[in-house]
Amino acid sequence: MGLSKFEYKVFDMRLLILIWILFPAIGFSQPQWVLIVRPLINYFMENSVHLGNGVNCFAITKQADFRKMFGVAKTMDNKIVEPDFDKENVIVIAEPTSNHDMVITFTDAMRAGDFIEVYCKIEKKKYPLSYEVEHVCAGIIPKYPGVKKMRFYDERRKLLGEVRMN
Image 1: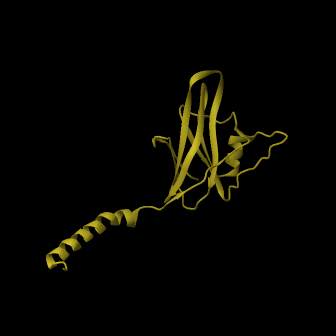
Image 2: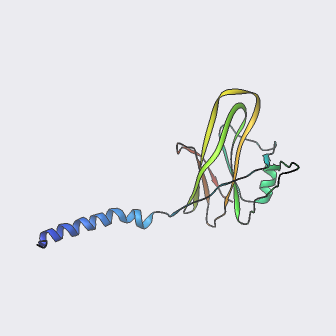
Image 3: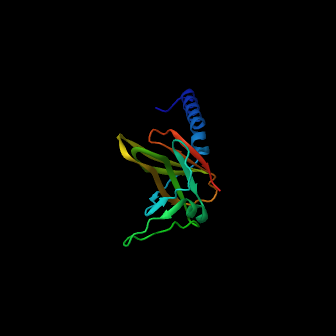
């Protein structure tokens, strides 16, 4: 009970169509690597940094730029670990000073070709504060040669901003 010549041709055509459909997805898709975002702790954003309205996104690739943007929050018992800019970049999401309480956290990051996608969650609290505060979330990610752009998204996958890498 083998297949007839007609059935072989139909099978061959189906196989060719399947390969033709899947080839672009297999052959041309960019590999993606999930990245670990290490929180940047014991630093504060300098008052001299001007933030525009809404969400502000930054990618810091040089130590001099990092030192202009962040100051050390040193106490007696904490240890300050500075990013190694030969191997790492710093990513930042910030909102300007307001009396609204919110929490910004990085949830995911991945590299695909010549760009990195960074995902975050911005949780705005319901009630206002009696004082004003600047909301900043900063993290450290590995540095990759050939990466030209960094794209920042919220939890609904809405693009918040795109930054060209230096």
